[in-house]
Length: 282
Ligand code: PAF
Image 1 (cartoon, rainbow, N blue to C red):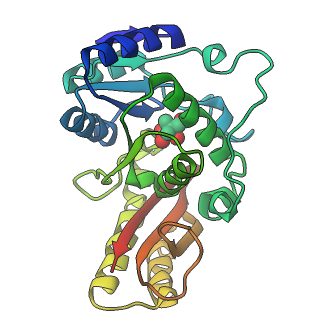
Image 2 (image 1 turned 90 degrees about the vertical axis):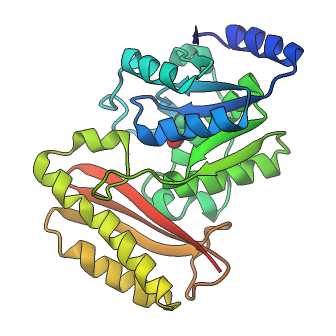
């Protein structure tokens, strides 16, 4: 596996692959990889001839009081895991490589898509995500880029960015990967102590309850959300930020479930902010 730290190295290698006529997939990550990331890598490997992973904890998507400094990092371990997936190249730049002195150009979704759900409490988050993802797409020029459905709002916003800016790449959404007891895999799960780890199951239990109600025919968003909220509220260590039902493409709030729907939540377990969701399509 090639380890590239500069944009020039990535471009040279991708140009060589293009000469060979092979297809390229990109899996953007912030490292500290878990099975969720590895499933993206495996999808990349199945759908493209060469897969590039980026490992970069992107400073512009963290707010001033968020966990940028504490965010877990272990590049050696990441490389060992990536190597096992057959990843052809990892791009691991320093912050200055992507954000040179005087950097002042951002990519922003200027709509409620970026202001609802996580955008309410993380006002600059999606600007940082769109900026770094568009940079990575320009650098790697992949045929396909792979993102997890756990970050469903991110996925919807990236799809919109690619459409709005006429980017020549296919965005592939990959299913949420869960622990055997249901907890969605996340690099931030490492922050949970054993008691909080147990309490965190209220998110996936709420997802299961919501899905059950929908399967039974319930279409009233308020009824579904109330049941999910009550379940999470019963967990003393949980502090709900939001549990919402929105249109899966526009992220606009909905009263009744129809078409493509996203039911998403953000919940603090102690000091750790976790997200989970389910999608449903009629
Ligand atoms: O989902 C993530 O890990 C990040 O938001 C991403 C897409 C790698 C951009 O930094």
